[in-house]
Length: 301
Image (tube, rainbow, N blue to C red):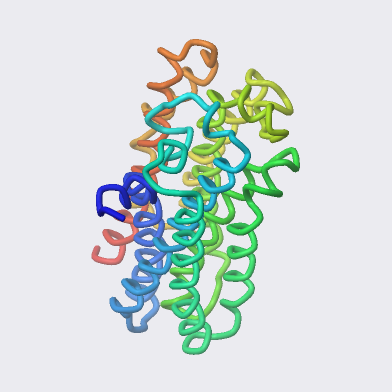
């Protein structure tokens, strides 16, 4: 498999999400070490981050594998932000190669998880098991259950932040959970808005995403409400002193969030929806990046 083909198959441009999730979780832990004492292990952060990226790759490729088997990827419209990599349907790799790539990257991440479970504590194991189950059953099972967006928010949002935090601290705290909630909301909304163009194709293979179950208009309302709640959550966490004031930097993405919200209600106009999806991606990535930078600044000053 050529390197360029591999980059397409793993959706390399989407892997920045897992890198930023790892950065946020590690930054949170670093901040608390500066505040309350303790040693931050940069090697642990790097190794755990690699494990997170490999699991993200597994999610992406496994999704493409199942979508090629159901013929869904032949029906979904191509957009810069949704519809899968098309690596299998375009003949860049075979379905068998895709399956082995997904399995291989998941298997590579397992020893990393085992290592940190042994070194830092068994409490990491339940988190890893939940994440692993979500990865395996997401496309064939969860997507047909009526509200699949929660799985993405939990498995590729909240849990990675908590996992990277635990790797450094050996514990879960209320403050860490509070700091991880915005990531869950953001990744939930990332998937939700990206589902809008795929409604007809998804319905043909019996998927039950939120835009299908409640309709695009109501899904846009849910998306918008959660976006506002996410920003209010950051403000509330700072007021309650569960997060430092510097994490208010995350609010700088609000203008992009407003544009994404406005575009979500113009869901039948692809000329308006595609830019909204782009703004949504920037909100998801930049909000978490700015929060992570906020934790670092708070630790320094």
